[in-house]
Amino acid sequence: MPALTTPGRTNQSVHQENSETQQYTGSNSAKVQLLSVTKTYTNGCHALLDVNLEVKKGEFLFITGPSGSGKSTLLKLLYGQELPTQGQVIVDECNVVGLRGDRLSSLRRRIGIVFQDYKLIPQRTVAENVTFVLQAQGYTRKEIQRRLEPTLKLVGLLTKADCFPDQLSGGEQQRVSIARAIVGTPPLLLADEPTGNLDPDNSWQVMQILQKLNSFGATVIITTHDEQLVRRCNHPVVQVRNGRLSRK
Ligand SMILES: Nc1ncnc2c1ncn2[C@@H]1O[C@H](COP(=O)(O)OP(=O)(O)OP(=O)(O)O)[C@@H](O)[C@H]1O
Ligand SMILES: [Mg+2]
Image (cartoon, rainbow, N blue to C red):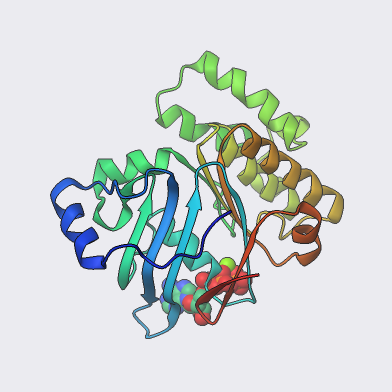
């Protein structure tokens, strides 16, 4: 079970160790840890307040909560798009707060991300959107081809491989972003409302894909508003409300 934790050590000690080694080795079994994390945006908005969370390797966690409660902010902290105002963010034993340049890129290569707003490249086809990260990571053309077809098949987009994003429905674009996130079989998958634009059948199919990835050992963290889907899946759930986390 993922744990809402009380940090076992002070922020200062984590910070001290991190500044020397860029590594955090206090909890080898934890894939993700938030330690007393507060995020206040520059406009003064308090998105997260003193949040503690531990998600172990191979766990599957839902994060629910009303619009504006801080769900996307929490995921953005995990892949280093935003920095915490206070506290520590540990992913895969690295303190994300201390990572820069190549080290941050290296961490991100191990994270599959489904963005809430998809972030597809308009001038590239579905196939190119799904594979460009693999190309950038130096996969061979043969390996890319080996991965592309089954991934597109999995999300039901094999016939749309040569379409551009503006030729797709919202739900199809969402499935392209899911394909892109899973094509490299990442050990950590962060999905921000991955079923937000899908009908119940497609939502359930996407959940089955994410659960399959999880059954291969990936840690999966999903934000969602879909209470029915959460109940149907029977995985642990934490709720964000006004920036504070609680177990449901
Ligand atoms: N870049 C930003 N600058 C200032 N405030 C922001 C920024 N991003 C988010 N916020 C604010 O932080 C709070 C949390 O936003 P966040 O996007 O994390 O919510 P959410 O739970 O993902 O909402 P939704 O369910 O609508 O996607 C909101 O009040 C939002 O207005
Ligand atoms: Mg959001």
